[in-house]
Image 1 (cartoon, rainbow, N blue to C red):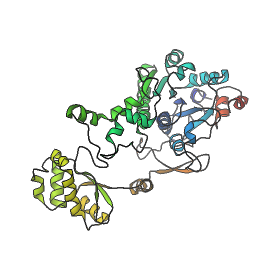
Image 2 (cartoon, rainbow, N blue to C red; image 1 turned 120 degrees about the vertical axis):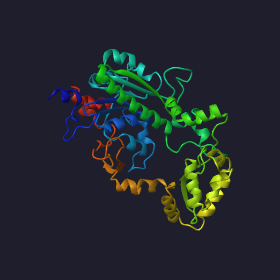
Image 3 (spheres, rainbow, N blue to C red; image 1 turned 135 degrees about the vertical axis):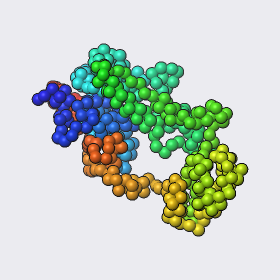
Image 4 (cartoon, helix red, strand yellow; image 1 turned 180 degrees about the vertical axis):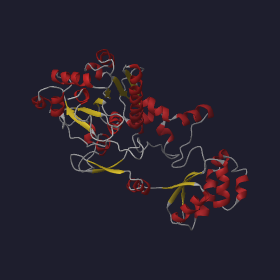
Amino acid sequence: MGEDQRRHGPHAGAEGPALPLSGITVVAIEQAVAAPMATRHLADLGARVIKVERAGGGDFARAYDTTVLGQSSHFVWLNRGKESITLDLKSAHGGEVMRRLLARADVFVQNLGPGAAERLGLGAEQLLRDHPRLIVAGISGYGPSGPYRAKKAYDLLVQCETGVVSVTGTPETPAKAGIPVADIAAGMYTFSAVLTALYERERTGSGQHLEISMLDALTEWMGYPMYYATYGGTPPQRSGAHHAAIAPYGPFTTGDGRQIFLAVQNDREWAVLCSDILEDPGLARDPRFATNSDRVEHRDEVAALIEARLAGRSIEDVEALLEKARIANARLRDVADAAQHPQLLARDRVRTVATPAGPVRALRPPMLNETRETAMGAVPAVGEHTGSVLEWLGLDAGHTQATA
């Protein structure tokens, strides 16, 4: 067996062109969304990801729901292509397995509670002393220091703390984002930080400690509202599906009662809308609508003009009209419709992924070019790979019973 196989295990050296992260081993003590999001993307790019789960139920996201062939939608989404092992990290055996895993790892990712990694002997300072080339990534709610360091953090709560909920919803009712944006932001910044650290290690030979917090990640995504509020004196107003700072930009009702969204980004496009769609070029010079700020101030009048023009037309007719005028537009699709989007199907973006309960539909991740396939391996059962990983580490596979 060559050195690469000894270090990285049976996934290295697979047939076909190597993926960008082939030969990289990632060990993850992870749960929920943020860390699994980061490591799934690493797995899709060819890394070997060994997911360490608790004995019994494993990652608690496995029990969020049972909608995907009896499995959790969150878990199926975020955990393909990984090997699952179960360990009692507080036991001597679990500690020995972790030591051996980390000696062979390139990356260690964890999103345990504040201080938990240190209590397990897995603090970044100690790990980097023992393994100078290791990249150690920790994900937390609020960061490793400061008054909120130990505060419990879940996606909705971080959406509240970062102001996302304050700018989302209708004028009467604030709302959370419909997807876990705080978790996703932290996961994607962890993914990009790990890739950067791997690139830097190629030049320096050294690993490093990365700290990503959900608060930092989502606050970055709140950049425009924060600038708007800080320098404008007032925050962007909640405007439902309309844009708070641009008009017309949002949903409009067509003659058949359906909704089409259109987006006018500048005064030139507004002039085209007035001449080609509203059939009144003079509106572009009307002082109520001459600039974007004017149109935002008179948003209701703008909407009334547009919907009067769309009355009596089907959504298909309106879409064709807007496309001819090159006005940006979109249909309001529900989730099931979006999953079968004609553009995704036309571009062959759908694949099948194996799970313990049977194959499921999955979308190709958007990282590689059209001619290269990402790994998209199977979703593991709890502890499915404990025996094979122990054997790879040179431990008696009989230890499996102690960890299951």
